[in-house]
Length: 439
Image: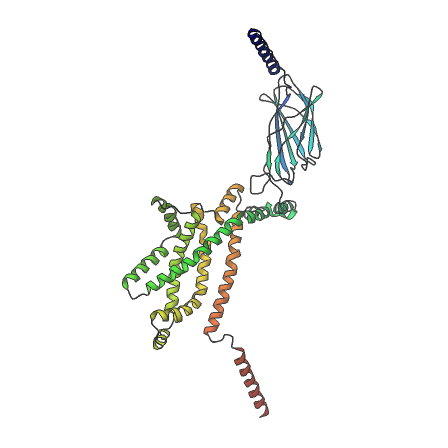
């Protein structure tokens, strides 16, 4: 009984082995045309992306297998794509020899059929370059599929690897509109204008550079309160009665004002890591900007303090105030009012000096501009960065002018008078005029 059971199991195993062998040996449908690759030319102005809804070039390549011929190829893209208005270039290589092949391309929305005037022989590399076609506006992964005709029969074409496309944004729509304007074409035809003020690149640069501009503002706004505190401290040390404190302040101020900010940045960014002091680049940028600005602010505050007449000190002393009380209640409030224009000008300088941080890899405005200029080969991103700087500096310059004018007018005694006194003076002048007329 056991012998029969063992024989039965052996027979079943052999039968299963035969089934598997037959399955593995069964012929699989062969592809007469093998898809090699499908790529798209970047159409992003200032970038290397493929944007949907914009004209680009699709390049498809396939290989005709041995013993086969291909007479027609149809390429199909996802819904929303269009081949309408496109032009097709056919290239067929038989080994290293280029074949003289022509054909007719028939676009039909999201697909295009190319019929060859002669069959593409076995072993040939077939390339189709389709220009002025568009991928879907919503972007995403686009797979090139389709079919081909071989030996009078239509076969399914193997899908290509996905082509990554970017959604068409309102900003890109503006660029598209500019591309179609005759005046833009005429503008860009001028070598200088096209290199420094290309309208399409100027529009895209504003969007690309915005993060760097925000970082610039963040660095200088975060650094300046610390710079003011340090500057005021060293200004007080410089006018101190103690010689050692004055010496410390003089060395600090003169060294920082007498050496380039570029050198200070390099010492902080490359010297501190050698001392095993590792700080985030953005935070280190804030620190170095605060220290540098504090030296200039120290001199501004010192000059402002020493511009207050000595009589102010004597008057405060006569009221029984000590030096600290006199300084914080009498002198510094007047000093702040006088130095506001100069401090604002220094803030503008500090804001522009953040551009030097790009030399050590801080992704601020000029670093973004440099990267974009490298990609595009155009200087327009630097001009866009200059406009970003002007957005901040021009209003501040106007504010400085207004403050200086008000201070000067106030010191001349020609400032606005209180309303009540003005009314009394005007009434007295009117009465005097009436009396004069009566006489």
